[in-house]
Image (tube, rainbow over all chains, first blue to last red):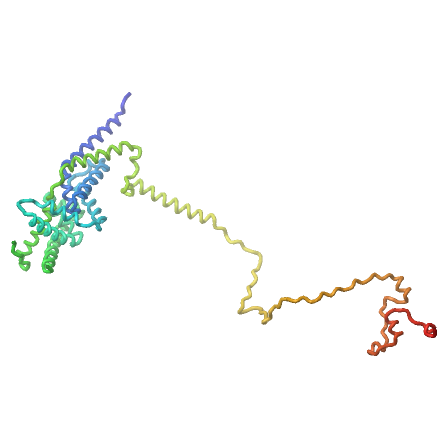
Length: 186
Length: 188
């Protein structure tokens, strides 16, 4: 019995696509997890978002060869997923977030009390970040990633590079004002 | 303990923002949980095997994203058009034109106009009086009338009767049609 050539070609192509996706997982899973965690601030949710990202890649694996920059493309996908999840889980209690924050702090000779105080401080800063307008907040969060340049941030958000810079400038000013205001209230 | 920042100076603002940047970088450098790559790969393998098992259903939209596919959107649009057109045709085919009647409509009498009853009220008959039954007239033969000396003509009433005075017995008898007494009988 002769196997048709097209069937062999399909199997080979499918195998190649799976190999390519596996390579993407190896290379970018950690980066995507960080991006997801910076928005969701929950380990389980962030990992779930990474898995959903690669499931979407699997669905659109036929267009994988057309993608020029896989890193930006994947960050954009996970960014949209986490923003959508963040919108849907507005009512979720933030106790898990605080626990996760204390867990990720570097344990370089800090006592338990110092760790708790540092976690409290970071929580306060993040609460101020959450008060920023969405456009400024998104640029500020993405700018913290060293592996993303301003051009790549612009590609992820779908805006121009000059918009990224102006939004970042506004975000810094607003953050200073918010922190100043909160300090005066204490 | 760290000295408080002087927020009035640009240096203080820079220090303040450095705090923010430190926090954000801490979040951005969070270590990924161990084995995340293998877990993602395992889930991808399950998903691709599920697609192979249900290969004949591969063209169907993925749950949660079904409206993103062009095929599903086209199908949904066609279904909406068919439903709207079908319901419109169903309504149109059942509506019949109003029939023109040959009868002139009678204007209705309202309390404010038209004929009135002039306050008359119908009183129902609650008590029924005695019913008078007419005596059946006997058939009279023509021969009998002549034998009796009477005719069908009504007898002329006497002048006395007409005047209201009482007549004599003879006149009464004659009037009733009875046998007249002769003078001979009186003489007896």
